[in-house]
Image 1 (cartoon, rainbow, N blue to C red):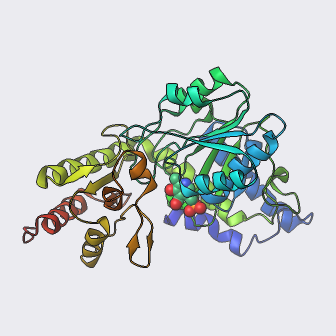
Image 2: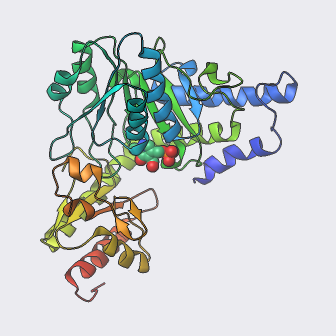
Image 3: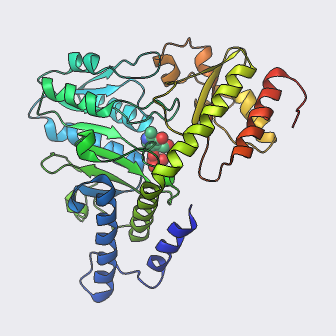
Length: 370
Ligand SMILES: Cc1ncc(COP(=O)(O)O)c(C=O)c1O
């Protein structure tokens, strides 16, 4: 977590610990902080403060969007459309909707992981009550053409709300909700150097949503529970700092991850980039290996002090094929071999050079030269 974020949150754990729903002065002070945090988030999203609902993170925001929009739309239809490469928070919410009797379909992606506006539009029906396509995929870094997808859906069914999971995008990509055209957008603070366990859902005015948590009616009745004031302050500060630094940080990260991808794929012929070569999240380098599991490389890199991901869930030593890698057309064997390196604020050019050399040394089984 960023130091500035921690410092902004600090007073709300001690001096200003009132419950924002309380009428007394201590509560009112906390309520002011919550309003300021909401306004700060709204400024980055280009929306009204009361369109921001604070949640416990990306998973809850995705569940509230998917379950909430579907339940609210029951009288208009029962068809829900998700992309095949959504995060589990959306896909599992979709499975829950199937259990509740909704007709949930998954839109396919191309070999780069992109959803095509024409394909999506063809799948939209007049009884479609929600479309959800993530802004950036966490495993392969592909950026979706959200504004084009939104426009294509609107042409076929102007009444269907459009949700995007922007959890991965929020640190480095523009988030203006009007430019994106979305009605619902999920955020999570810990992907932005903010605290874990806090997020937000943007809900465009007029978008009908049923709550998933029932209780005291906080957050305009959409998310009951005593508000996490320190968390909201942390999220808002992290988001506005990221937005202010984006124009410098995004090109820096793009350059560094571009170098990493180029050198790794040039240095070993049996590793291949996954995701889009250019329309990808700055700082995101993802691959699949022809000849070994990502997990085996991950363990060796970890031993050398470099943390990366294999991009697929692992249960008791058994690696499941990644649903994302399957969706882009890899075989179940290769879909177990994902490897993902992500760079961040503290990652320097030297770190990238060293990680590249170490990775290549592992892959080629050659001694390290740096
Ligand atoms: C794309 C995406 N959506 C949702 C989530 C879930 O967010 P959280 O961990 O805040 O619940 C994550 C994070 O792992 C993610 O990468």
